[in-house]
Image (cartoon, rainbow, N blue to C red):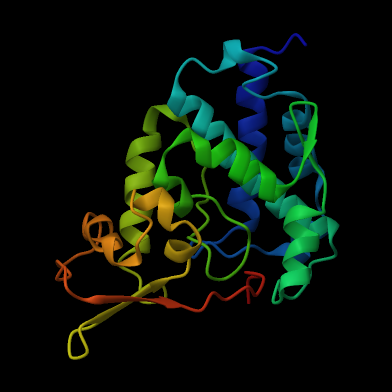
Length: 235
């Protein structure tokens, strides 16, 4: 497939147009309005259905460019899937999540997969734990969805900023100094082994302290905040 860098840049501009038009500063998406005007989102989804680091490797010169592609693609396909599923109210319950994340087909670089398999078989093996604060499955307890696309040149900076914002937002972390407990998003439970080699929740504290404003003592207990699977629709 003869795809140029200009083609890729145009596709990214199209995705950024969607983010700028339908996502607010808080990261909430106006799915109702988007469902009535899906042309740009569909153009980007159609592009990544054919183009990936596997099909056109010349477009991706660095690992950061590859990872940026995958974050943009995951987020766009999650957004597109919410529209295709009729804008469900939530993904509460095992079977709702199974149908959306595992049983719904998506296409990336000519290969049929699912959001679940894409994240776990392609993105997570790239070995960057901060990706969990950029990937967005379009529910309320996901990290904030930015209004701009990810690009390789600024990816590390952007991931660090998103991680710092995540670990200093009360929705995602609460430190109870009286009880000596830190309550943190279930994202840290879902993917513990990505953050710490031991896979032990107690060992998450040094990772959290890289981003949290104020050092959490190493002896504090770690508990997880129940995840809100409600669709992150703008009010």
